[in-house]
Amino acid sequence: MKPVVSLTLVTALLGTFGSSIVCAKGLQDDVNQAVTVLERFQDLPEKAIPRQVLGDARGLAILTVLKAGFILSGRGGSGVVVARTSSGWSGPSGIATGGAGFGFQIGAEVTEFVIVLNTDEAVQAFAKGGNVVLGADVSAAAGPLGRTAEAGVMPVAAVYTYSRSQGLFAGVSLEGSVIVTRDEANTEYYGRPVTPDRILAGAVKVPKGAGRLERILNKY
Image (tube, rainbow, N blue to C red):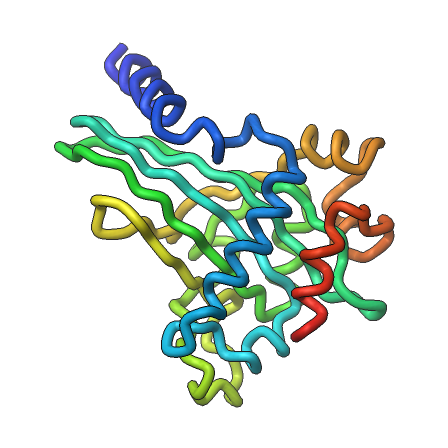
């Protein structure tokens, strides 16, 4: 009984503090947010993602996650994943994450994540249409920072993670988190059922609503 009550309370917390960023919103909102997140990361030179890291990336997953707590804690968020193809960047595929925790915590925090997919295998993990567990299905490491960072070396992990947080918690980590595909959001956005593997392979036309995201990605 206790886990059920806990999950109910966590769900209520997330609904109170962050209904705008959990999975109920449409994919276009996540696409727009992804553009904002990328711009914010590159606005701070000392904390920017090195251009070579982005230039070598096989794909990117961009998430906005809310963590809220009052004795119990929970987090939930949504975003998109895109992949580099032979003809440019793919359209966005919807993703989401969530979880519950215990411990005395009061406050709320929004964290923006950019997950750089360094290998084709990392892209395929997101393309399968199932659940991806960072640190288990794909190895993860904190990425190098700064536009002058030496990035001309082989990646040390299948994915690099970058995050920016605002709030009262010390920080949210996605290590061990489950990231799921949002099939219904993809269907609504593309106007028909589409699978993540076709989207990320570039087999589905990029919607006009993703034009700004495509333009910022084409810089790398």
